[in-house]
Image (cartoon, rainbow, N blue to C red; front, side, top):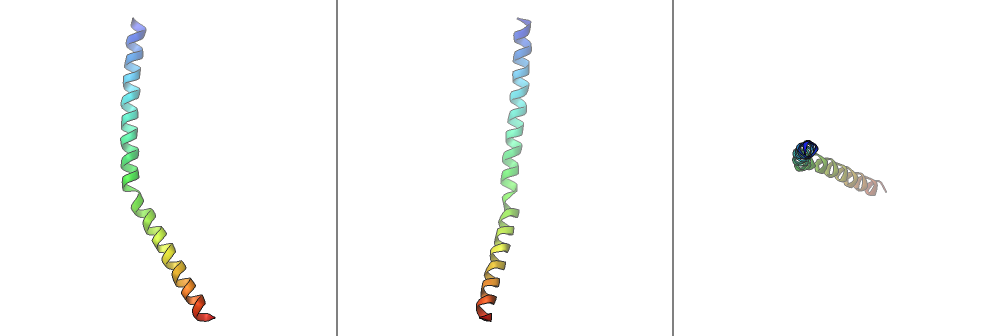
Length: 58
């Protein structure tokens, strides 16, 4: 019986930690994508400018 209480308490704590980690990861994923999009847009703009410059040089 005493082992059951310890096991239940451990399971409860691990479940709470798991929920906190899941929320933290979701918040991280929601807040993070804006910086990635800026980088991709900047790279695509650079590629477009470079291709236009090489066309003009030909």
